[in-house]
Image 1 (cartoon, rainbow, N blue to C red):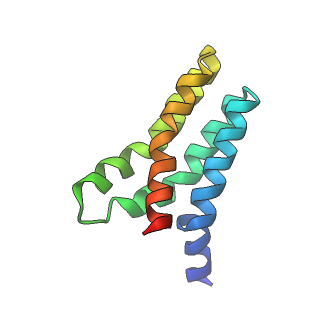
Image 2: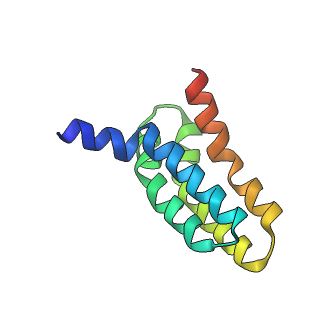
Image 3: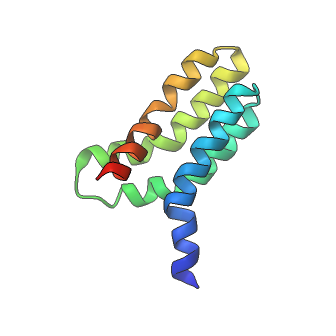
Length: 99
C-alpha cells in the first residue's frame, strides 16, 4: 500500500497531473491552479534532489518555486512568461520519459 501511494505522489501521476493543472491555470487565468500544481510537484521535486547529479538537485529544489512564480505572473497578467516558467518542468518530464 505504501509503495502504491508513493508511486502516486512521486511518480508519473504527480508529474503529469501537476503540469496539466498548471497549464489549465494559465489558460483559464486562475493562479490557484498553479499553486495547486506546485504543491503536487513537491513530492517529485523532493525525489529529484536525491539524485547524485548536481543539475537534478538544483532543478528539484526549484520546480515548485517555478510554479509559484508562474502563479504570480498569471495574477499580474503575463501569461506568456508563466508558460516559460513551466518549461523546466516540461523538459524534465520529457527527458525522464524518453530515458
